[in-house]
Each structure stands twice: as C-alpha cells, then as structure tokens.
Amino acid sequence: MTNVRFKVEGAKDIIISLEKYKDKIRPEIQKALDKGAQIIADEAKRIAPLGPTGNLKKGIYAKEMPYKKYSPSVAIVTVDRHIAPHSHLVEFGTGVRIGKKGKAGYIGKSFGIMPARPFLRPAFDSKKSEVERFVKNYLKNELIKVSAK
Image (cartoon, rainbow, N blue to C red; front, side, top):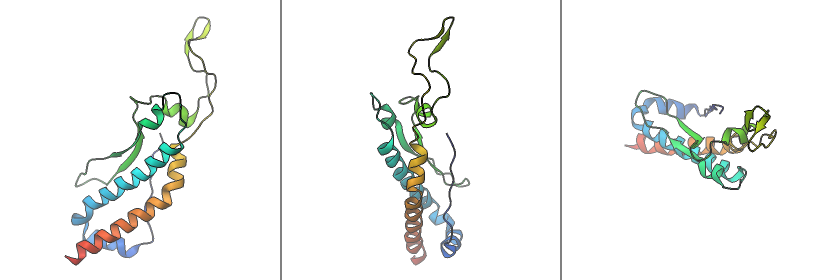
C-alpha cells in the first residue's frame, strides 16, 4: 500500500509551543494521531465494497503504533492480512487473471481482470482536512493545559 504523510502547517505559534513543551506533549501527539487515524479507518470501512463475507470491512483498522521517545509519532490505517488477504487486489485491481496456472492455462476459480475499487486512498483524501483540523485543535487544547501548569 502507499505511504501517505501530511503535516499541519500555518500554525506557527503551535509549532513553537510544541518545541517548547515537546517532552510533556509528545504522548498527546500520539493520541491525537491515533484518533485521527481512526477517523480515516471508519471512513474506509464505510466506503469499502461489501463482499460475500464482509471480511474486507472487518479487516480495516487504525493501528496504534507504540510510543517511542526518540522516534516520530506515527499512526496508520491498515488491513489485517489474515482477515482480508485480498485487500490489495480490491484497492488496486488486477491486470491479470486470478487463478493457478496449469498445463491447460488457468485452473481453479478464475474471475478475470478485476478493476480497482479503491477504499483506503479515497478515505484518506476525503477525511484529510477533518483530521488536520482535529489534530491541530486537539494539540492546541493540550498545549493550553500544559502551559497553564
């Protein structure tokens, strides 16, 4: 899947405050990112195609990455490959026939070429601004709390 990064810009005073209070606010940055990732995961579940088992929707989740003092804060939206191992085929489509290649050509269940039915990228694109606003406001409120102490 594609790695997507975004950063909140234009809040110079918040960025300066983050630097000043970084040790106190760092765990809160992780919480904000985790909640933001959940917003995108919820949207991805909503727009993902519903197959016969529903496993694709069931497999989408926001993964809370462990907080590490000296590494960047990270939150991701992913699909559990044990629940929905076909997620990449749905997101990107296939350019070839699906099935096992045998002496007589493709054997087994063949679905032919499958067009892409993206759900992760559109979820990110549609919720990016909302997540940016959420993270910015969350951190602003946390900075107010920290600086008041």
